[in-house]
Amino acid sequence: MQPRMIANYDCICGEGPLWHPLEKKLYWADIASARVFRYDPHSETHEQVIDGKVLGGFTIQADGKLLLFGDNGSVRTWHDGVIESVIESIPGEEGARFNDVIADPEGRVFCGTLPGKGHLGSLYRLDRDGSVTKLVGGIGCSNGMGFTAGLTQMYYTDSTVGRIYLFDYDRATGALSNQRDFVSVDPATEGLPDGMTVDAEGNVWSARWDGSAVFKYAPDGRELARIELPARKITSVIFGGDDLADLYITTAIGDKGKAGEGEGAGGLFVLRPGVRGVPEFYSRILL
Image 1 (tube, one colour):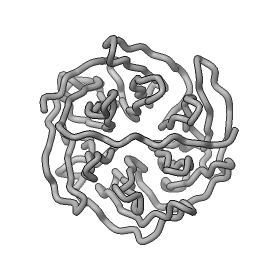
Image 2 (cartoon, rainbow, N blue to C red):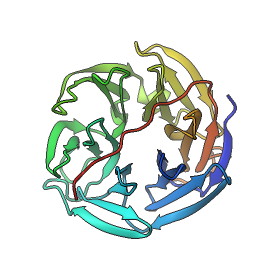
Image 3 (cartoon, rainbow, N blue to C red):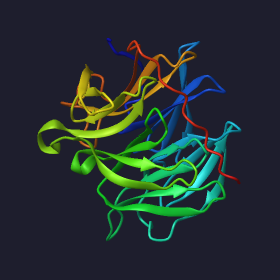
């Protein structure tokens, strides 16, 4: 399980890797510089495709477009260089931005925000008709999400407090309930849990900001393994490839520069961990 660097754009905060099953390519972003990149594993080539729009996360629509979540609660689509607005803003999110998002089995999107002026972050649900519902408030840093194998529970990370929460999830309505801790770490000594994904066996793979590793957890929260990387700030993970057996990992340089962050800081890595992922769900937001 040796990670291999496959691209390095010196990302200040490389984030949000997502496999595009229609294009058979991986997308990821540098959210700090508002850039989005694309990697083709068949040709082993990569390119920058978006520049200049504030971005915190994205999903893939059923028609193949990217659904971009930006600042002030804004939502846009991107396809072949064309960006179109879906939602201009969400009241109360002025000065804040989205940070991580995930589509659910019904095509809704759970989307978390960072704190803004005078308020902490929140978790919202964007329904298919474009309506927005606030589900959770008081969040320090919304981050990685995922669904349990039976699609009856959902994981949600608050990096600031070092916790991955577990909610009961109602697929029919998109409601979340019964919030409790799945994993809790000490941010001062163990780094911050960041982006995450769930494999086909129901295990959780969680990136660790300032922890130099990806952590693998069993469904009961037990640590099963760690994958060490040559970078301190590991930001997110996702399975991809034709067989969903490749684990892609993003990293960050951070806001203090590359010195001391490791030779791989800001790069995109891949490895084959011996387990497959599950397909991510398409968002189906009506435009």
